[in-house]
Image (cartoon, rainbow, N blue to C red):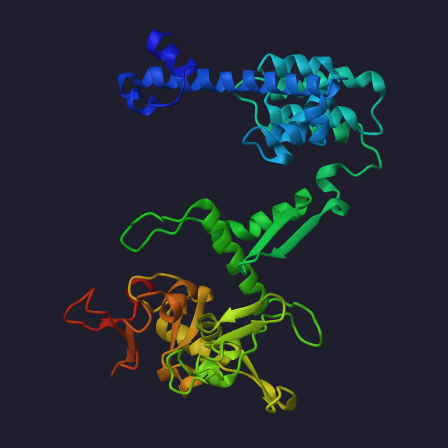
Length: 434
């Protein structure tokens, strides 16, 4: 290894990017491998030091409620990561063979955690004298550049099968399943879950097709990150479930998204002259242009209007105090027959350049039904959720694209002048679907 390459691995990263051009491709590969080995070495050093500190805590560690919290408070680690480091150090003490391999840098942190977890809670049918041999098998799977978490978990599953007992392995224990859903201060939702392997497999299988990268019609690669694609796929999965699945009954109804909004607010725009005024002359904010969801509360009127394009509508007549006077039977705005006809006409999202399939589309009212737009074929067009959202709420987009039904009884899209100064009408995007 050259002197420069040695400096790359052992020196600071400050200004390093400006010097890397001097290295050849082979030297860059060597530096990456050497740096990875150094990370493993320092990881083992940190675990050993933290474990020793946990055995001989001083006032600072005691005041921090444990060495893991102390480490997090004095580094850029999160508390959970500090506790994991401290826990691994303590867990390695009874298993010197695993500790030695970890200290040599031939076993990663995560693999060491898996192995000691097996050693601490071996299958009930495994005799005590079999543990050393099992540890050897696990270390063999965890060693070398070909080691993967899947290989280690496969060995664990095999050992659990060999020493099969009535105990349910952790990967299959549904009693450990947890799902936490919490709303944040800004109205978003945080989801954290821990599931058994079978449930995870079902979830990943259901999301697989929905999370694939989708290039644009011109071949431009999908710019969404993997996390964004997964989030989009999860949203679509829920929407399909609520639209089509046999969901049972919740509170006398099939589970679905409920949004409550004043009919006047749904029809009016924010700058409508009919906006009610507060006593001081300002807008009456509490009831202006806001929908309400039973679970998560407020929802903007633009998003409410988007949902209102293709929904099951229930009407409740209220008095001046908000008390219900009468309720009319619910009705579906877009019927099943109309959706079949829309699919036959638009063949998917009709927006120019979009190839989204019919199953991923909403029926959009060209003139919103809350503003008097009828639910008839000449006022409906299929749009995917992305283009539907753009038409309703995207800044600088709403109102710029105009949709009209042509003499051919098909939708035509008139672009804004920023895209086409002449605003030539564009046909519905059926070219790619016929």
